[in-house]
Length: 154
Length: 154
Image (cartoon, rainbow over all chains, first blue to last red; front, side, top):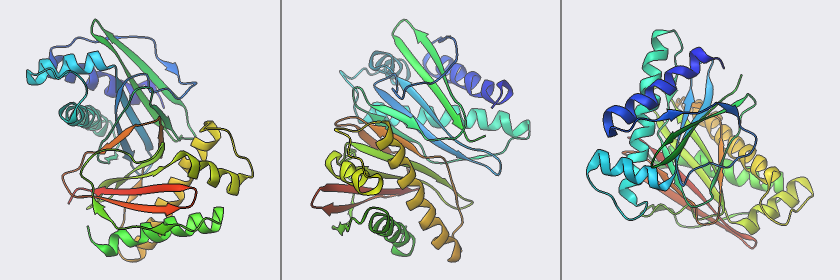
C-alpha cells in the first residue's frame, strides 16, 4: 500500500468536508496503528473488493466534530448522535470512498465498494482484520478530531 | 433477498459453531430490524460486493457466549473480550461468509468478500446503511445469544 493509493482517499476526505460542510481539516502525521481504538465516538466503515485489492476503510469522528458537520451540512445540530447523524456518516463514508475509487480507477486500480456500516458507542473499538499494514491518518479541526484508517491485504 | 440466498449463511453459521466449537445454536424467529442495536458485545462485520450484489453482514455475540466459544475452540477462557477473542470473531465471520459464498457460487450467485472488521464495546450499535431490507436472525445457546444480520441493496 503506497502513497499513490492512499492519497486519493485523503483528498476525497478533505474535499468532501470542505465542499459539503465548509470544514477545513488539518492533516496530522500518518502512523501505523498499534491498538484498535477507533479514536472517535461514531465510525463509518466500508469494505472494498477488487481482483487484486481487498480491504476496509473506517472514518471515525469525535462527537463534537460530527455534530458540527451535521449543523453545517444540514442546518440542524442534535444534542447527541442520533439516527440522522448515523445516516450522514454513512453518506460521507460512501462519498469519500466513491471519490477515491473514481480517481484510482483512472490510475488502473479497480475495486467495488460494499455498503457502508455505521458503528457508534462511547469507547467502541474497530479492529480491521487484515494481513497487511494498517495505516491511521489523523485530521484535526477546532471542533474535534477525525481518524481515517485504511487496511488492505497485501 | 429471499430464503435461497439467506439459508446458506444460516447453515454456515450453525456448521461452523457446531464443528469448530461443539456449540449447538438454536435458531429463533427472523425479523426485520427496526432499531440499530447490535444485540451483542462484540460484532464481526464483513462487506460483500458482486456484479448484482452489494451488502454487509454482521454477527454479534454476547460476551459470555463468545468467551465460551473461545474456551471450546482454543482451550482458553479470558476474563473478558481481549485481542485473541477479536481475532477469533474475525476468523469466524470470515469462515461463515466464505462457507455461504461457496454454496451460493454453486447456485450462480457470485460475490467477493472484503476483509472482516471486528467492533467491540458495551452498547455499541451497528447500522447497516442499505436501501434494501435488513434481516436479523437471533440464535440462542445456554451461554448467551448471537445475532446474524444481513443487509443487501435490492
